Length: 89
Image (tube, rainbow, N blue to C red; front, side):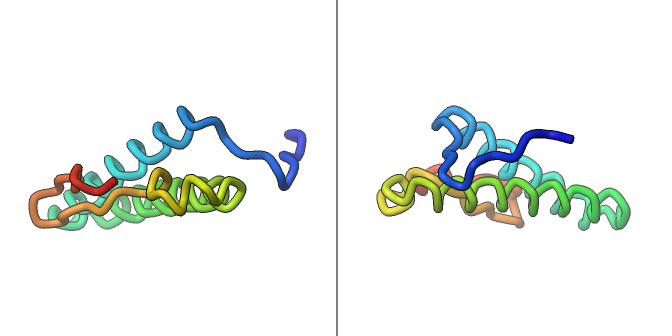
C-alpha cells in the first residue's frame, strides 16, 4: 500500500506543469475520440482527464498563491480545433 501524502504536501511546479500538459492533451484526444464515436476510448480518456484535473486542483489548493496568479490549473481547450488556448496564463 502506498504511503499517504500529507495534506500540506504540494507538488513541485514541474509536476504541475506536466499535469497541465497531460490533462490538456488528454482533453484534445478525448474530443477526437468523441468525434470519431470511439465511446470506450473517449470514456477512458475522460477518466484520465478527470484524474489530471483532480491532481491539479488538489495541489493548487495546497499552494493557493499560485492559483491566485493563474499559474496553476488546466488550460482551456478549443474543442473545435483541439488546440490549447496558449494565451491563457
